[in-house]
Image (cartoon, rainbow, N blue to C red; front, top):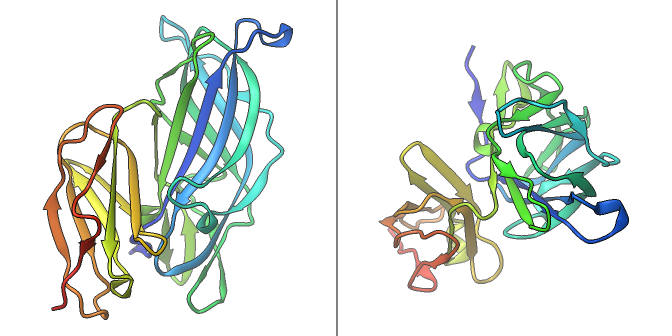
Length: 269
């Protein structure tokens, strides 16, 4: 059977903040917050995902896995298209025992997942048989240290997360997770808006997508491996503008690398 993928540019990020405060209830504990953010897809007007539960699994210094722990989260449905380029919604805020390392995160997905395209017709998204009800993200590698704030970012690449098969659309999130302090960021601006550009960056086996927003056409990627990345500015084929491909300056740990000029202006064919 052939799977057809729809989206050239959609990312979801869950950001988990962990800290410790000197209160009776928080002694030797980390404080856990989870936020949801996204970058949009050009063919979409809305994309709703329902998350029912969020769980984490830790490992100790010997590599022994603990039990799954369900976080204090009431469940919710989120239109990811309202969460772009740094906009976030907080999902969890609680204390969590310090001293170990979060190795896995598990999301239980609900049944009310759907998308709305430029046709304005809602299209239900069935959960793929590959994941059933739960999405497990491995190798989170986030150490829970008392009195230290640490963030975990989960990126779901929807370019490979929604597919069509036999006339039905399926949700099968493809995700990575990493501490927020990992790697660096890349920010740039592209014009004109009439080109309806999509931004893709690639390095080795990684491919990430974003859709510029606002009148300035800003785009931002975070959690990037150090070194140069190839940047693809892809114009809508019907716009009459040419694609542009170049190599970025070197991404460095903990820094935002700015792409110049600001903006990069696509040229007519």
